[in-house]
Image (tube, rainbow, N blue to C red; front, side):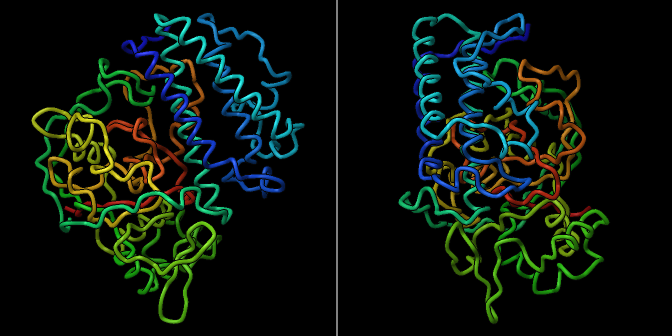
Length: 428
């Protein structure tokens, strides 16, 4: 049996369950008719299937799972055959006999009600608390994925009325110089819930390096585009050039050239390209090509975590131990902020927005830490080792409760539909 995290407060977990459901519903509840299935694309799921999958996952781990690994029956007939993402191939999800939207929502609501009642009935059940937290974070991640889907398919912004992000008070330019040394990479065993790929902290040696205080902006990336960056082979790896040739892009996806200026498609409308916002929706290949153009490099994930967490003692968040607030990080927001915004969230080294705004690509391949042992949800990390690249830090669409400095995101290098950008390091 896995080592369970410290006890969680059932009332807080119940609040988180309800909040995760409310956010996911806000992003999906206007998807109807033909949008319930949408086009067959490798980077999206049919929304009707994904809504049901989120409910199935919560029922699977919070109501059906037993310590022996056995499962009790689902309240929905054929649920496993419909919604188990580890066994239901992506390309057949459009062809399944899915329940109607009303039935899917009913199933989703029934599961949540039963989980809330079980939490109230079993306040000392730490295994249940672990799986409830897993279900909360799983729904948070799918809510963000739905957010990506809306951008990919050109649907309306799900949060058009959210508060505007603050304007920057001071610039975050140049590089932070870090001395390196011994560093504990990964999560400590006494830090509460973490995913298996964060386990456990282990000593590494970090060489001195210089890392940009801010993410690469649209204005900086535009210099690469204007120099013919997407047409010049010398700035691309072999794999990256193959991708770019097949994609046929001459600029980042969603950039629209118009006379001598650029516009940006943001959900279902276009806006002038904001020069001070971080470049977003670029994949790992594009990030590396810009780095070659600029004579820079991507940080390793060890360097990224060292820059985000190093102080007199390792920090949980870039600014310290206090939980994220709207003044420290652009999370659960409506839109991107300028790369200079949120100075109150600076890391000790002076790097800005190492949490929130855009996910940041690193140079590192997603691999297990020493002694890796999969948690009960084995499909979360283990199948993707060696094929994906690591991103860190979260985006404006990520929930505050999900993140910490040790949190590892991972995607294949050609994916650029996420709210992903990058920051860079100086080349020695």
